[in-house]
Length: 197
DNA sequence: TCGATGGCTTGTA
DNA sequence: CTACAAGCCATCG
Image (tube, rainbow, N blue to C red; front, side):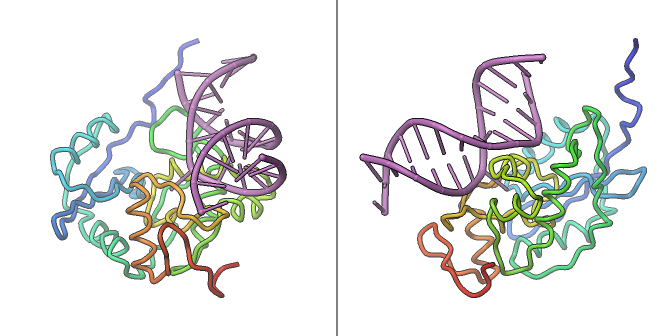
């Protein structure tokens, strides 16, 4: 039986925006126009391109979505930016395509995380319980692979003891993101207030 | 397919 | 307070 691997390998358009010495980039599917990947800011431009070429077989750099990349930089800066979910590709793809959502569990985790309001946090346990499971740890594993950091605010998910927890961009970046949203943190611990569920 | 591995949680010392 | 073990479950190779 012959398996066709590259039937849905469409072209990815990469747009970037530079701000304060940081490079923000976003990958859009040329066929659907939806976001396939948000890259956390990088300092090194060459590194940025290397990641793209490693990730995608076929991509081109274009300024077409520069405004979108700019919006993402604003989220990083701590501004409250509303971006609708329908600009993201949230379909479940069981193929071995990279940077896509492969399971319903992962999709559910991402959707639940999206609901966390600006300036608030929830725990991994909370997300799991909302999904009716005790797979606390698997929630973390799913968020680790979040293709849309900042838009899907996985930085707002913290540990049950209220310490920050891990983050793909490093726990320092996670802490800074939370502080920029006005969440009080002492050492590595969220200071509990009435915004906590 | 199955064991190893994780952005976790809880209990115990 | 810290440290560590056991439990849990989705994912990966």
